Amino acid sequence: MTSVDPVMNLSPATRPRGCLIEARDLHHWFGHTPALTGATLSVADGEILAVMGPSGSGKSTLLHCMAGIFRPDRGEVWFEGQRIDALGDNARTELRRTAFGFVFQFGQLVPELTVADNIALPLLLNRVGRKAAYAKAAAWLPRLGLDDLGGRRTGELSGGQAQRVALARAVVARPKILFADEPTGSLDTLTGELVMDLLVSTAREEGSTVVLVTHDPRVAAYADREVMVRDGKIIDRTDAGAEVG
Amino acid sequence: MYGARVTVPLTLLGLLERESSHGYELKRDYDTYFGGGKPLPFGQVYATLRRLARDGKVAGGDAEPGAGPDRKRYAITESGSREFDAWLRQPIEPVPHLQTVLFSKVVLALMLGRPARAYLDTQRAAHVQRMRELTQVKRAGSLMEGLLADHGMFHLEADLRWIDVTSARLNALAEMVRPT
Image 1: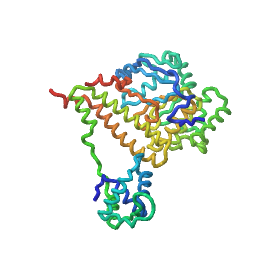
Image 2: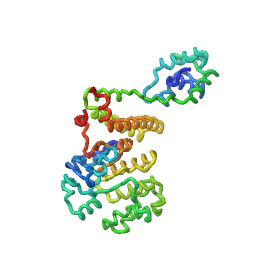
Image 3: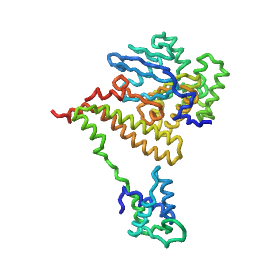
Image 4: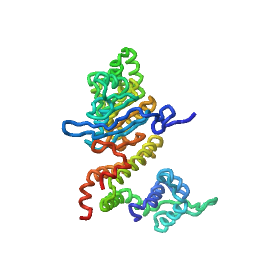
């Protein structure tokens, strides 16, 4: 039996296959301020991709456009051979709920609900029965070291615990793509590493593709590949020099 | 004094402060804890011990019977102990790296109208790739290997921050260094 590191090496089942999602020449403005100025990027099935760049470079906007949260002003987003930027709001919402998972910097959990409620929420929204949804949520607790916290309100959790709950909530519906925007941005180094270990291990085990936006090279180092966003474009190292002499 | 940057003699003194040892035991422990994948040559171990003995920092006993190049057991002296203690207490010089190779490359590239940003981007990718390798070491290795990898990663991270800041200021730097 071949031993495979679940994080850094890819098992045959999770080895990148074809392109899963693609951004083609995306442009997006906030008022008169350009955020994306022709961003083109493709992500392979099973790949963990880090999108890096300085503040204001457009990396989060790119993630939001690819994930169907923003509709780009120009350009196209293709997911599994389907153009998704042109879908109506309801269809994009449905797609986000069924095929995409999200982890944001501050978790964005519902503080009044318990850990189990938060994790079960995407399943309930997907019309999974209550009993099955809570059983699936409960199964995630030990996997993410949250064993005794199922009944705790998320407003009472530490930052690291909250991000682990956010991760469980993001993957409970087995999304094809996990979008993570600065998932460790509010955590100290060691806690951030724990969350990244779990995020990457979980994605590998579940076969999810990950698009990870970060300014932190320690976080990017968990990815299979990294790209840089600068001034709203993906910078290809091979031609970056053309910009500055 | 052997100086803050000459660590092999001082590390051997530290191992001898723990207990008197033979050269091969010192080599074994040095390689285990401090070698970082680069074993200390036997020749360097014995040459260092002879130098330390000459300087009165260690004392070698009589050669014990048996095979091997050196069967002496070495013990740290009072003077060696003071030297080691002083080294431990002394902070390591914060090296400012005011003239790095990368800085020189960037300035020269801008002077010569070469693609400085591309060089920085290439360097950045190499740094991130090294961080990826060290992340693997951290995940697969022991706590000691992980902490050593962390040390490397934090330094790489500092370089990356410098690369980002410099990259953002290239146009201003180009104005300063380009011939008028």
